[in-house]
Image (cartoon, rainbow, N blue to C red; front, side, top):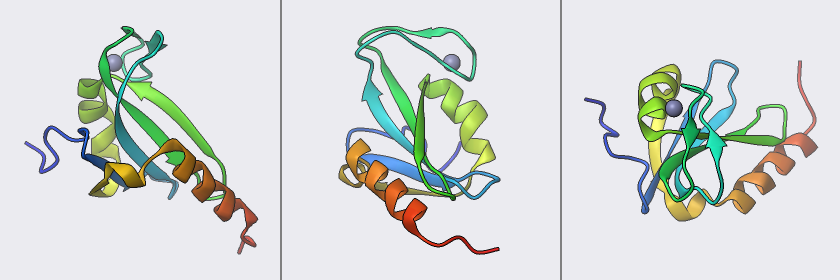
Length: 110
Ligand SMILES: [Zn+2]
């Protein structure tokens, strides 16, 4: 299967780009409450290991979704380009939100 099989895990996150050029960070997480997976529209139970997908938008700002691991692997990852693994400690929510702010502060071209 994919070279990123089993990722993200506690040590490694994944980062790729969607068709709009937004960064998509895939981060392993444990759910603190009930979430609904955008891939299959079923619930992710409290306490379940799953994948947070945090977007850092090309035009600034961030947004995130909670996915089942399998749904993220089957539905989301194939849509992303240039997927690389990155250390999990570089993908904390605070860091990514800061990253989104820096981008939105940048003058926009085109
Ligand atoms: Zn799902």
